[in-house]
Amino acid sequence: MGVSRLSLNAIKEALLTVGPPVYHYTAFEQPDEYIVWAEDNQADSVWADGRMQEQTIEGTIDYFTKTENDPNVQKIQNALNNGNISWRLNSVQYEDDTRFIHYEWVFQVGAW
Image (cartoon, rainbow, N blue to C red):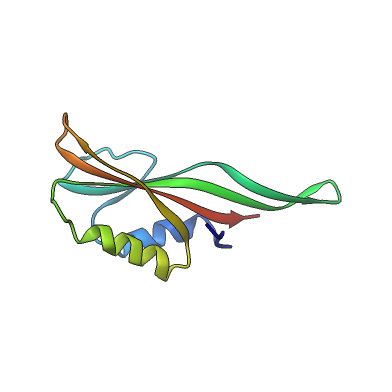
């Protein structure tokens, strides 16, 4: 996965174009469809002259829906592509307790 040299704000801006509510870290409300994104860790860095010169942040985007074959899945991927954001689909799960289909993407952006 190539790393996009964008700020974390680019993730939020891309996801806001999709339509469902977008939350950072956690969702306080749980409508029938919503997106949650969060940065998780430092994936990589470049050091020179004893200082970090470049830092890559990795995080997750989670989409929760009760609709099978939800078109927002493709809209999320298109929004990430259109925003030049590096990503990969990590998992798709059905959650018995909430009845949500849960899609998870991993993203990487450069930040320094």
